[in-house]
Image (cartoon, rainbow, N blue to C red; front, side):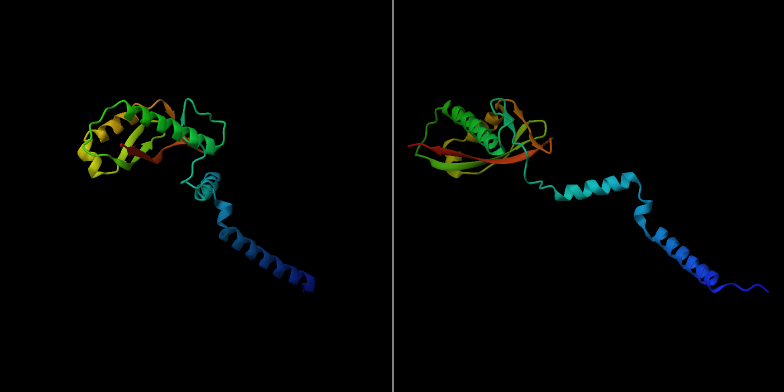
Length: 172
């Protein structure tokens, strides 16, 4: 009769437990079965959640604006160019008014990812509509007549951006 030694019996039990533990680890660990594409997609999704989509990295730029300056100066150049364009546009017209106007109208517009521009909304103002009924048309045509504009960038990718621009009308 052959007797197993104490060491041999314990070793067999130990190996059985180790084997069961190994099998459990193998089948319960989903990451071992995840493909590279799934891991990449998971990393991309995590990164997408950390991005602040309400903030752009570079403002839309007109040809006269420098893309290498800080975002603050890009914004200033964008706004000054837009303001000058609208100021020149409105000064081209001679309006006959019944009474003085001193008001601000907000214009909401979109610059798409190709640099195209479209009016989303022009704030209603009864006084201005009564005295200058063609005002909205002038603004819409004025936006279409803007110089070429490069779209805003987010992480180097062109993105659409919405803006609200106040137009101050003051006649006295």
